[in-house]
Length: 317
Image (cartoon, rainbow, N blue to C red; front, side, top):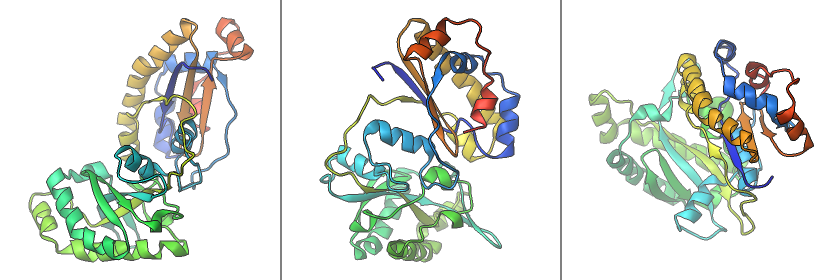
């Protein structure tokens, strides 16, 4: 598509029953206008069991990145931007996190709820660094809940996105390939290391959750032929945190805000005749609506087209 406005909305729908109930009771007039006037593209295959989220696969395609499930090299891309190594290096994002142990399962708390500051994160990284180094992995601090790790272990190691795991039971998402054995061992070693670490004693005394393990994601190597195929879209991020917390009242409120601002702006752009795209992403699939082509012109000009109900479209994603 030619240059124009492109809005991408992750977590536009979720599979939890509360999501559907919230959608059906939340008016989204500007989204309805867009869905009525734009032409839907093909719905790509996908399901809720993929390691990479639909919005990640779509964004990777737009950026010219490999789209192998669980091996979209997001960490390598960031490392390249940070000038930390060549394009042939294999990287992963490492996220310090809290695993909540139940009677028959282990779940990961939402990472933002940890409230980790830079000093605590760096202390944790330095405590873990020697163990990673034994497996040929070098750690680099980026942000309190995101480090970069370079090591050949990550070159062909599919890993589930954090968006798949936060707030959920982790067992279905644990890497099971033979090459993942060192990573699983490292996770177990870090659990033992952190159990009695002074950092966590201090956090617990302050009423904060302890850091009990880590998650690896964004694995893979960038390669020398990765290049953006189009301008990146504008991404509406406001639905992510409410969705991860399954706070459907807050999620519906965030949707209303996106509709009143981002979607309204896209409607206005459409009225000027400029090309627009809208990408809606759920847990199973992502789909893009566009204004270009004869079909788009007819839908923009036609007044007899039946209005589209956003909930019907979103619940199918």
